[in-house]
Amino acid sequence: MIPGVKRPAHAVSRAVGRLTAGQRLLPSFLIIGAQRCGTTSLYRALARHPLILKPVLHKGVHYFDVAYDQGLPWYRAHFPLRARTARLAHRYGCRPQAFESSPYYLFHPLAGPRIARDLPGVKLIVLVRDPVERAFSAHAHELARGFETEPDFARAVELEEERLAGAEDALRACPHSVSHAHRHHAYLARGRYAEQLARLEPLFGRDRLLVLDSGRFFADPEVVYDRVLEFLGLPHLGDPRFERHNARPRPAPMPGPLRRELAGRFEEPDARLSPWLGAEPSWRR
Image (tube, rainbow, N blue to C red; front, side, top):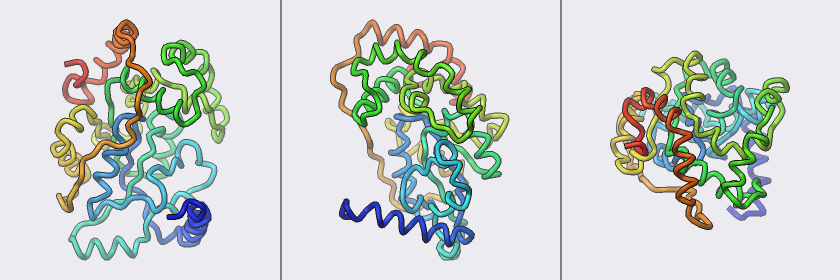
């Protein structure tokens, strides 16, 4: 689409979506994170499945984190019409499932309860990777997008605690507020995956949470893809493609002493993650 036409076209699509919201699907599953852990790669592989329906406009709708004040009809407007799903169900003999991928959902303190309330029965998929590499990748990502002004990764890590101080409490106190630091500067905090999963377990139960090791996904994507289809109760159809997306070049390698220091900080959080994966994380083997 021509860039100058894209924004008006999206506005028209949203308006039509709102008018037909009652005729649209809500998601059966969500990819909720973690950021910089392969969510886009998994999203694109799944979107090629004929019974898995992506959002009409965007990979991530970000309703349950930063747009919850828009209301459920606004959210529904992003998904396909039920009439389409009826045709697909008749063709394949299996109910299609809509989904989206918003990697801030895992970390946002209010997203989990909102999802549980508005999407009863929904299943959640979480990808995790070496939290040190995730933090380094996130810093390069935020820097490239203009959301980070500190070019030195080590310094950005030093600033994290100060930047995030009180941010979660503020989000809980003012539910429709947005914290720039919480969303864009949580380099180490987002890598403490077990803490975030423990917050979700009482809301969804372990049977509706699938936690995937991104290292294994990129090393053996077919096996992980089949596991996702089994989790969703879908047959193996279509022609998935497994590619890396959204990789960011690094200005320089991470210094060895800093890498070792950060790896030590994650030793205990990584150990708490092992039961969710059913194995030791690939980056600890």
